[in-house]
Picture (cartoon, rainbow, N blue to C red):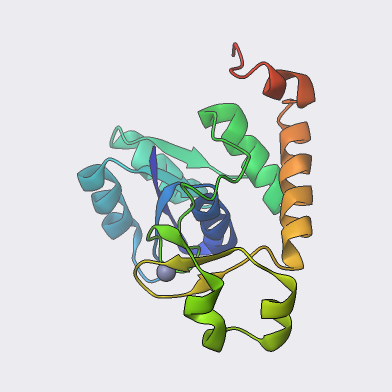
Length: 169
Ligand SMILES: [Zn+2]
């Protein structure tokens, strides 16, 4: 499942990439250009623009009109309609900035590129294979997991269904 996201959903783009989805993001293309890319690359178009959504649907493209007011609501919408995963697995996560794969990297290799306090408190690091951005489960990690937990709740996917694996819907 690959996505194409319009300019109004930059934040959602980063979330989906963290969750491991291939997401192309454009904020300077017009409707026709976005529709052309979605069609050519077989990407699901995510947009908040009703007009663009209808145009895409009329062309027979897979598109979703995103209505959620915050990230948890938007992610819950996607979980309900497209069954996206709402848990981060760093083995498949993509770089939120550039959509490339990330890989684990040893602290020794990047120690000169992170703040001293970070190297003191964290041991697990990842690096983007393309842009070189370094990631770790910093102070924001808790907030990320809280948002995902809320999204799972909103999507009606409680702890029980996660334990049993696949949902029947
Ligand atoms: Zn990157």
